[in-house]
Length: 386
Image (cartoon, rainbow, N blue to C red; front, top):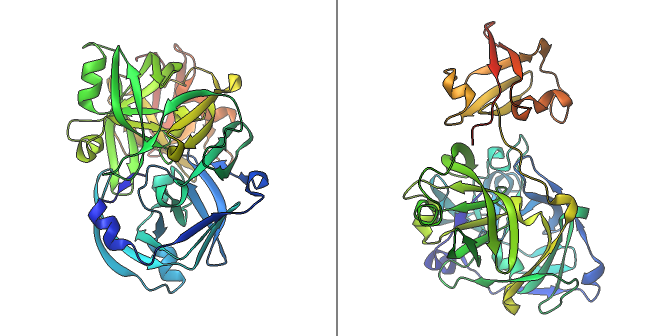
């Protein structure tokens, strides 16, 4: 859900200087979260005394309120121009706020940007009200405990657990968290550290070409930003480093030339899909992040063997993307087609999370019988292709 405000736009949006403080017991004030279908950190907080749902999004330079929420509450929205987002640009407004409260953090005064926040940007059917961005989080240390689905704010400089260090700062021109990534003997920076991005690591087309030899097995995938859908390349690399931390079997997305990274002049992004391998401390004021490996999370990424990326819509699966080089592409599948039954079993309301839902990544060699919603019957033989 990438949105980047230029420094000029940020200053234009800024109202009275806000004051953010931590409660004396902030260390004990853990905030529980769940992961959206798009792999983003979703939690509850308050805005001017009202409960709202939010996503923790260090890749957003200024915190963002959903336009529908602002309209429903009758908030006065001031026009604010446009901002860069994945898939294009979006219209921006602003609203002034009295109080924002998350765990032990309270901000009084200040401004929120206002844009349309579609449900598709969370990977599911439920939209959120707010993206909590760099302007709220950067002065403090942010301790994210993915294993226990909780986070908290601490004074900068605190180191509540031992971990492997990586550099972390706020880019002065982009106003987002940045670090670096090592791949194929090359070091890339700046790379945005983006808790609002559900993927693992994303690189610009140029960075990927420098790091990996031509012919490295890759396919395609689709992601959804506020400005629309974007198709990118995808591969699984055997090893990748962030600072002094080494990770193996990492899914990397490869943007097309002129993609979002090129637009904002960065080498790529580190997303929640990578960060959740660790307990993470993000402390840009202290110049570092800490990564403490979670052995339970150190599993190989799930690979598609069907070549289909699917969305669930009530009683059917909609084909969102046919992956390049996969068995579905070879069989002539197309985006937008709909599946109503798998191996004779209809898609039901409990499909998500059920054993039935595992077929697109099942073992190579399995032949799956698929009934399309127009009544046609197809068979798809699964295989490994990237």
